[in-house]
Image (cartoon, rainbow, N blue to C red; front, side, top):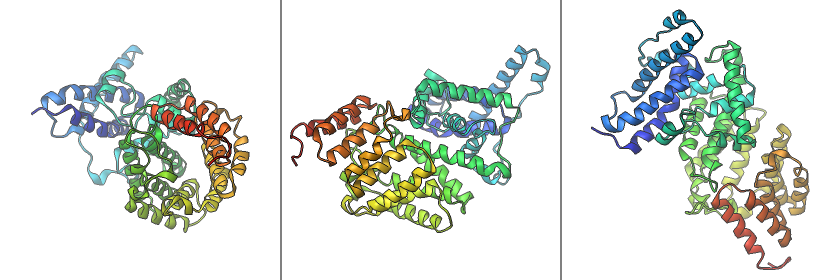
Length: 436
């Protein structure tokens, strides 16, 4: 019985990171395993629509990838003149491991892969970049045309999250793989003493994957990746179940739920973004809001909060407000002030400026924006001129706001967002400064 190609693609998208995690966890050799899994996925994309799904799709993929990994390792060893050593690398037949054999942190192969990619030989940024290549979605076209990251985000998507050019991120990923190969430290789950440091990198990865799925392409150049947001929430739930007393794990899960609760209202049918103040709040997911608020309240009660708990607290204040007019902006501004003291993230600084403007007036927010003018991470991004335009509009400076909106539109990546920003500029051109 044949299988529809769309169904095959959906299945491969979900299995890809788990298969890579299983192969690397069992056999190591991340770079070579990545190539082997890519070839197994390509074979599945070609054969399954015609032959039908195997009884155990993941087992099929791991067996095929394992055999291909054997061939690749042997070929690599042969090129180096070590055929005999390569012959001893024959891999055992893959069988699903009994549930009792899995460690707590390895209860899910995708989660295991996240920890394995947070390799001690890498800087935190490289850990995140390498991991992002392994946890995204996968389509048949991506397999056949690129044979690049298994289920991974494109380098352009990763680069957007880090506010660096795509070529820079490509070099970073290449160097990360080389550094892992040269370190001599095998991939594997971290020892207990190293777990906390690597957990922070895993949380950052999950946050960026969620952000890419929820907001990375909304109003941008491509379709939203809601599957990525759902996968990030799923993995965060697993982490919270395994580490229920970790406040930052709970904070990240709460942040994801409280943010995702607004998903249905955040864009028009044509993809044009809708500002939070103009969203239909009846479309927000009340169940997710309740769950997220409970999580962050419990986490904050346990001790000194970390950045994810603070962001979740901000999201909770937005979600619990029955309307934009009664949002507790002074408290949000205070929380953003704490958050900016924890890291020098320019996007956080932009949000802080908006919160200050909403609580103390637009001129106070504009004064904060002046300190971001020379930040190279925002030099090509649309967000700084878009925020400036919004605050200038609040201040009644329509001409300046219009020019800032047009600048933001020129920098914006996708048509829906450009259309929105140009529409804001056009609306301002219809009346002189000071008119309502």
